[in-house]
Amino acid sequence: MKKTNDKTDAELVALTLRNPDYFAELVNRYEKKLFRYVRRLGALANEGVEDILQDSFLKIYMNLNGFDPELPFSSWAYRITHNEAISYMRKSKGAQTVPLQSDDDDSADLIKILESEIDVAKDASRNDSIERVRIAIRLLPEKYREVLILRYMEDLNYSEISDILKMPMGTVATLVNRAKNKFKEIAKRKKLDELINTP
Amino acid sequence: MNHLSKDILEKIKKGQVELRPKWYFRALRTAIWSAVIFVSIFAALSSAIVIRHVLSTDWELARSISDNSIISTLSLLPYLWIGVITLLILASDLLFRNTNKGYRYRTTSVIMASVIISLAIGTGLFAADADQPFEAVIRKNIKPYEQWETKRQVKFVAPEKGGIAGEVESADKEIIRIRDFRGNSWDIDTKETKYTRGRLPEKGERIGVMGEKTQEGAFKAKRIRSWNGFKKHSASLEHRSQNQ
Image (cartoon, helix red, strand yellow):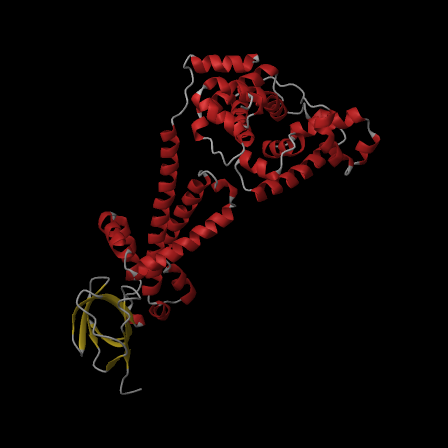
């Protein structure tokens, strides 16, 4: 018999429907990933992120009977969490935010995009590039920020992003391209850090 | 087990959150798909009505009696129904997007498919005359619709310009008596008319007439066409005068 942590997501969903204790395994599996995702999406303080995460998992549990096994559970979990996060951020506009949390690995792909475009990035230090990435992402419109984070920080493919954001793959591809261009445009500006404080 | 999963399990066990039952999701899916089908049927019926209006309009008569043939042609298009179809197709796209996998298809593809399906089924409904009872119900219950129809029909009553349209009150081989859409009676001279198809118009049938006004209440027909749609009433009477 498989141990709990060897079971697939779909198997755990089926088991949870019989016994809610199995839901703990799903929570443990996705907690860190979704925590990081929400943090990147909204640059919120830990407390806000934890609230969103708890609400998301409760919603996931509530809707388990509606889970379509043809969809990867991870995409479904991301989708519910994404919607909860967006809803929370819209309700609490002006809530305290923190600098976008990301480490070198998270920003690596986005730094590569920058380095291919702007001379500043080649001459600048690694820290400066990371800072530019953080600020540029924060300044992006919501629709571009979310696809860029899903694609380059969460490392998801277009099909997964399509399932999460509930839009056609072609639209995802278009948004990613536009997001990259907008991101480069913002990141190229000299006094980037001043923009963040401009109302 | 970490504190988050512990908190969540506690809430579940206390009954603060419950599983939504399977029937809830089945009912939701059924409701959405039913709405998609319902809206599509209405779009198809509306398409059938547009086809009927376009085919039963005497474009030739309209152009001959108008000052500006392009504007008059455009003004006779059934914009009301075209508007209804547009709204219904947009609604079906919105509903389809909320099905399990509907979001994977581009809006333009869904709309194009809806238009094609509406036209295809609409053509079938038109051929079966299935749109007429539907339109009759609307005409009976929505007064402004009847007024809109009358307004469109009245444009064809222009005897001074050589055209009238109305409902047949009586018909024989030489004279057809009609009441035009403005409520005036006309005796249509069809003495030298040759039937190119079918039969004399029947009492109650609506027809369009091209010709010339001979005197008040009298009209000589060069051409008469049935009004109520292409399929059943395609009789067309050609005037072959001795002078030609």
